[in-house]
Length: 153
Image 1 (cartoon, helix red, strand yellow):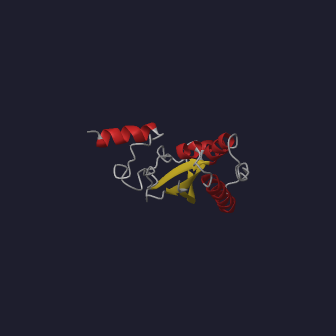
Image 2 (tube, rainbow, N blue to C red):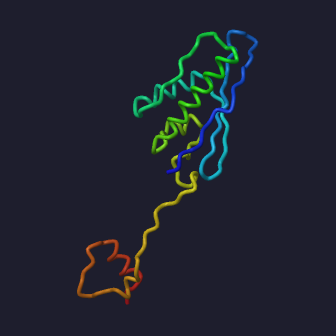
Image 3 (cartoon, rainbow, N blue to C red):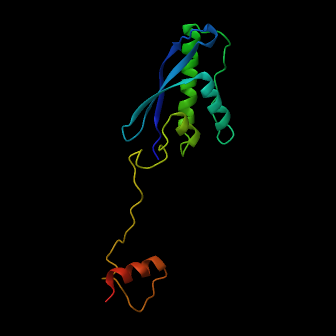
C-alpha cells in the first residue's frame, strides 16, 4: 500500500466576535498515489486528539507541545513544522492508521482503488486442460471446481 503524501501548507488565525473564542487552524494537504488531492483545516486540539488515539495502537513520533496563549508568527510556524513532522511520521505506518484516514477526511484511504492499486491477479502458468493428467487428482478444491466448470463434457 502506498503511503499518502501529507504536509501542512500553512496556518491561519480564525477571528470570532468573542476574542476568547479566536483560534488558529492548520491547513493539512494530502496527495494520494492515485493523484487525489485534498485539503482540510484542523485545530491543534484535533491533532492532540489524534495523537492520544493513535499512541494506543502505534509507535508515534514526538508530539509538539502547546504554548498557552502564545500566538506569535514564530511560535505558530514552529508548531506547524512540529505538527507536519508528526503527521508525516504517522502516515508512514503501514497500513495507514484508520484514525489518520478519518482525521484527513479520506474514508476510503485504505481501499486499493484510492491508492491506484488492485487485487492480486491469480491464474495458471500453463493451460490446465492441456497439462491435465487424469490419473492425478488435484488436491485443491478450487482447481477441481474450475476445471469442471470450464472443461466438463
